[in-house]
Amino acid sequence: MNSKQIAEIAGVSRSTVSKVLHNYPDIPEETKLKVLKVVSDYGYKADGAQHKRGAFKTIGMYYFSKFEENIFERFNVNYNIALLVSVTTEARQRGYGVLFDLIDLTQGRAALLERINEDFEQRRISTAVFIGLDDDCSFISLLARPGRHIIVLDKEFDISSGMRCLFSNDASSAMRACRHLFGYGFTKIMHLAGDQRKLSGRKRKEGYLYELRRLNQEHAQDCPPLVLEGRFTIEHGYNCGLRFLEERLYERYNGVLAGSDTIAMGFIKCLQEHEPALLDQIGIVGFDNEPEGVFVSPSLTTMSPDYRYFARLIFDLEQNYEEFQTGVSVNIEQQLIVRDSSVPKEQRRSDLPLQEYIGVRT
Image (cartoon, rainbow, N blue to C red; front, side, top):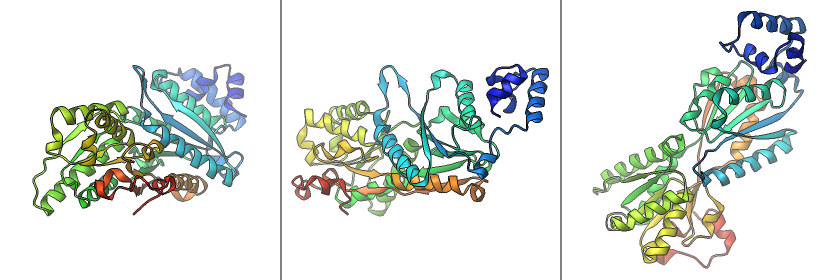
């Protein structure tokens, strides 16, 4: 039996069945009792038991992206594609399928919840993985049910409901990036921050502020923190570059921690157009290991998520549900990939073969 058949027998819509099963308050009591009687008579179970049976094995990948005023947050394109490829590759090795979908808030929260609940109930997915959520997506916690696999990347939820939360250790990575810049003589560091409605944006800013204070104290220097906030976009980085020039910030700062590679590339583009010589005097580190970072000049140093580890962990949690059914929170470290943008001009190696730029040089 599935929810469509239950709906036909009860004489209601499939969405009404879904709402009854998930205790929506707007369903009349008479309708609710009628649906529950059919559910009881036919022994219908919405989800949970299928994990033990192994009757279906499909990972649902739900990506959150904003489309507004013709601005697409390009910062997450490589991240999302790299993660999707890693999960799909791991799925093939473990005998799973992958369903890809987008979360679009213009549809309304109720419609989104209903659609994802139906993906579980209709056995389209055995696990839901949510990526790129911001503060507007806290309603995802309403999907939690006993026996239901839900994994969320880089957003905090109450794990006591059984949700599994996986995090890139963004604060620690920002601290490491600042230490790297400082070690190469770029001691006056500013931060081009990304979206503060996303946990990654807040944690990277938090790590920058903490490490800059520590470096100031340890080395007896007076470098006031400077954070320029915006979106994870090339446009934000370019605008930061204009401000860097107009306010002559280069007289006070020689290190730049960018909240993403796209921000960093926009910043580099601005300086290339207006004051290219400044690029020889400052150090820059980004995040996310966007492939275009290899081809900008200077090539971009970056903090890179371990996509393959994320993928393996997603399937380990899926296949060992009983062990982690009470919820779990895991921080995953990122790799520092060193290229020319974060080392002094005289140490840059623009003549290196491409494959050496792609790998870690530390």
